[in-house]
Amino acid sequence: KNEVEQSPQNLTAQEGEFITINCSYSVGISALHWLQQHPGGGIVSLFMLSSGKKKHGRLIATINIQEKHSSLHITASHPRDSAVYICATGIIQGAQKLVFGQGTRLTINP
Amino acid sequence: KAGVTQTPRYLIKTRGQQVTLSCSPISGHRSVSWYQQTPGQGLQFLFEYFSETQRNKGNFPGRFSGRQFSNSRSEMNVSTLELGDSALYLCASSTGQGTNEKLFFGSGTQLSVL
Image (cartoon, rainbow over all chains, first blue to last red; front, side, top):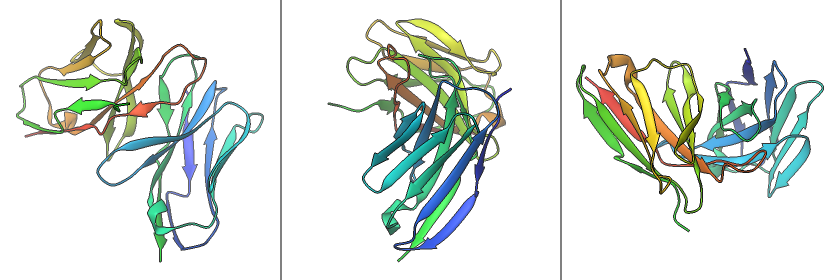
């Protein structure tokens, strides 16, 4: 059974700080997703990774397949980055059967 | 391009009733997956449909079922509702043909069972 663990569960920081959220999983995967969920429920897919590193604006996601670990970094954080960040692993290629972490609630204070 | 549309947005039902939720994917997307989100269990995969066929299924009882139509729109049905079925139900769509793809989520249906 694949377990997905995120840390920290809650994170409060000041505007401008560098943010790191970690995700560890227990079995081999085909892909890892980073998702963002704002109050009200809507989920946005930020990244889908199978190896290496991806960058989009101030967000960077990395994955280490050997160590079964991924990180999401936010540079120059802003209050609008406040949201729940969720990592999810896919273990079947071409399918959307995902196993989710419990989420990290991020609050950025101005 | 229109996003993923879920209806209704909110729903209140009583125990024992059944409910049907709808999900219209992005045009051209043939895969629709469904997820349940609760404060206690977080997000859990329900099932995925691709080209009108169930491709994968999560660990939910048979009261949870779904289907997909030829236009890729999908419905999920929950029969004999229980209090524990109160949750946010999300669907997501993708082309379903890539090896690994980003998912596009709807805004969800908030179901309350009284």
